[in-house]
Length: 276
Image (cartoon, rainbow, N blue to C red; front, side, top):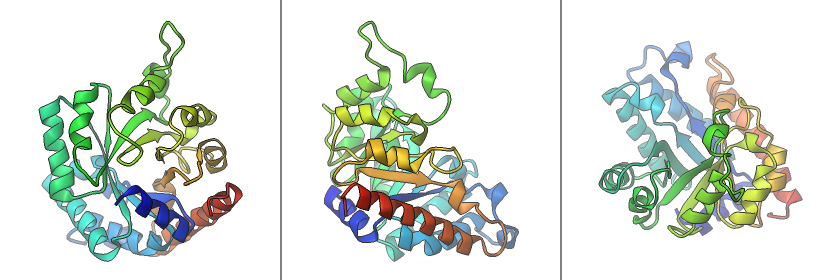
C-alpha cells in the first residue's frame, strides 16, 4: 500500500486507528480454548468486528513466536485472512528487526516476500546498513523506532550529546538520508507528549506509528495536537484496550464497540485539524 492509498483510507473511514493484535494465548476467552487454532480464531473475530473502524492491524510477533511453529502459522493465517477479506487494511508486522546487512536482508525477504505484510518495525541503532535492506523493497514500508513509550526510553533515546542534540533527534535527522516519507515511518510513543512538536519540526510529513494510547495512558488529544499534519500523518495503535476489553463470548462485539469509540474520537480530531 502506498502513501496516497493509506491517506485515502484514513479520509474515507475518518479514522487513523491501528488495532494491535497482541494475541496472548493465556488471555483468550474461555469459549475459544478448545479451538485447534485459538489465536487465529480470536484474531479473525476481532478483525471482523473492528474492520469498519480501523485502517491498520499490527500483529506483535512476540506473541506468535513464543508459541513456536504453531504461533507462526497463526500469524501467517491472520495476514492471509486480512489480505483476502480486507485488502484495504494496512498490515504492520511489529517485529523490531535490525541486524548487520545480510541478516537484515533475510528478515526483509521473510516479511516482504514470504508473508507479504505492508510494513515492518525496525531498530535503527546498528546504523544505515542494518536498515537499508528493508528500504530496498519497493511498495513496502520500514517503520523506524525513534522515541518509544516505555519508561526505559529515557535510558538512551533522550540522552544528549555535547551540543545538546538528543539521540532520538539524531536518529530522525540521519535516517532521512536513507528513505523518504513514501517508504519510511517512525515509531513515537503516545506517552511522549509535547515531544511530538519537536519531532514534527524535524519530520513534518512522515507518518508516525503511535503506540501507548489506551492501556499505557497516552492521550489521543495530545498526540493529535502536536503530531497531526495536513495528511493526518498518524497511525495510532490500541491493543489491549480493544482486543481484551471483554473475556466473555461477546468479546468481539465489545472490541468492535471500543474500536468504534476510538474512531468517533478520531473523526473529531480529523475535523478539528481540517484533514477531512
